[in-house]
Image (spheres, rainbow, N blue to C red):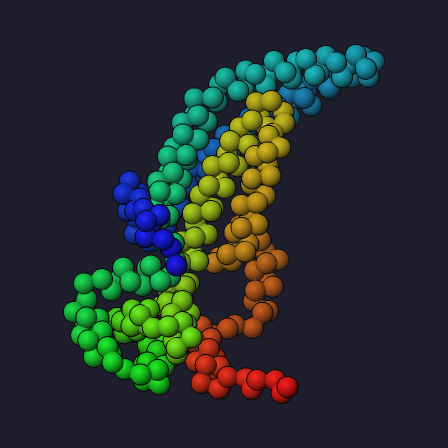
Length: 278
């Protein structure tokens, strides 16, 4: 349990609804595609220039031809870079600002439990339920948890999670985190992946910029991008654009109903495994 003396609220965090985050991520996608098109067009132009030069210098010795083409392309790359620099810079700045806004809202989506409690904050029904279950025993609380999970009753779930928070851990008839996950787990995973993806797309734009301007990227940034992609795969809320194989694998995997997890957990608590014989 966190130490109250070390727990400090981040009062500077931006507030964004899940709809705001989705809209911002759509803008990031659009912005990233525009930047990618700029770089692709410039690279395509550079490649055409290479072919034209090699074709026009076909009669020159290979070593001399390579040297001439290389020097000419360095100049042409610099010219293309100057021509597109303002547009690319504007796009990367906007990308960074959008991603930073999404990143700032991360504190509001730390866990399904946080989202559940916030969603039902101020609910009169939740307050009435809390009063009614104040003296309920483990069996009744377990039964109501099953009902909340089956009916997706957020107010009942929030009241139950608050109630067992005052109980000894060993006496709790269900796992509050699992119940909160039934209510908000899917949305939490979606938004968590959106936060990671926003950061990845900014780094990809910066990497593409550097590769175009210098002919090679930043190894450290490439590692960061790979790690963010790995993190997105681990969250697995939705497939990335290039994860066709992952989508097919998910289609073949058996679907697990989160309500079944709650029921299984409750059943394990009611019927604990027998202790091993001496």
